[in-house]
Length: 178
Length: 178
Ligand SMILES: [Mg+2]
Ligand SMILES: [Mg+2]
Image (cartoon, rainbow over all chains, first blue to last red; front, side, top):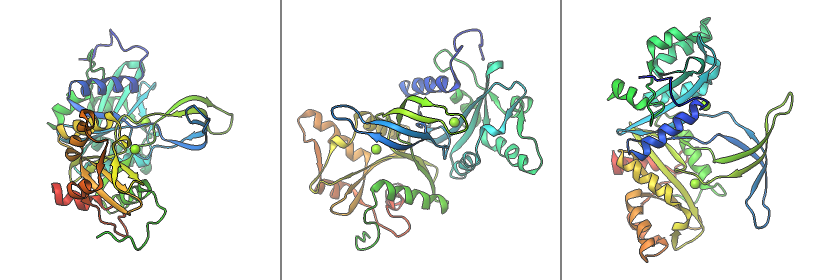
């Protein structure tokens, strides 16, 4: 169950997920890693007797999602986002190629989803990508540009907070897919 | 079959694999991507009216392998290396945590391997990670610090060069695992 009363304050969703993945790895439950932040490197110095220093670089848009790996023989792929919005999740947090990537993953037999944290409510949900797609498409057909909190509560799954697995999303996957 | 006679000159192994993966994606055969180069970002400028500029950063050692994704429902994970050595592949090209990662992938039901290109011979091999592990361990027990070319030719699988799939490793995986 979600326990907002202890721990976790000031930790970003990314930090919590990285800790969780580290715990899964140590417990030999799953092998899931965050991909490095994509960076376009423009200028590098190679000083004598010390490490190469990147002197000019820019953040690039990711071509896929942030996390992937393997769990119980299945390919796992997800994006994680937190919002300070209390009433909805703005779709502008995602990019078209990320959503396209999730569709490709599903087509090839993988499991893809979104983890959304409403920071101010201290609630974190897993939203299967199939549920995301209809909201994603309808925004281009005059639909709303965000997913209401109430819809995520309904179509998504509250991810339990555990002491060792702060975002215990495998617990939700077990209920949904295994 | 390998056709050193056309194309491909001056392309790095990484470029060839990226092209191959792009072809697989377009053909809807597999969803496999290279992970971004891991970078430790130290200093970022946020100029008004233009993109954030990374002013100081360092290359970090990768904690996993370079490529992963999904093919026919299976989790795929590999590292790619090229060497100018003609007689052996030096194990110093790999790191301990990369090999450990490959073991974890296998344990969880994924397929992991090494792609090795002998640049000067213009030959590229797929070596299943199970074959790699024994060489990896024996280097710590007085064994040699490299894998002989002849052993890779024997234990590995020549990856065919195709016009559209310059490093057609799925062709080898089909023979080995599907
Ligand atoms: Mg992200
Ligand atoms: Mg590498």
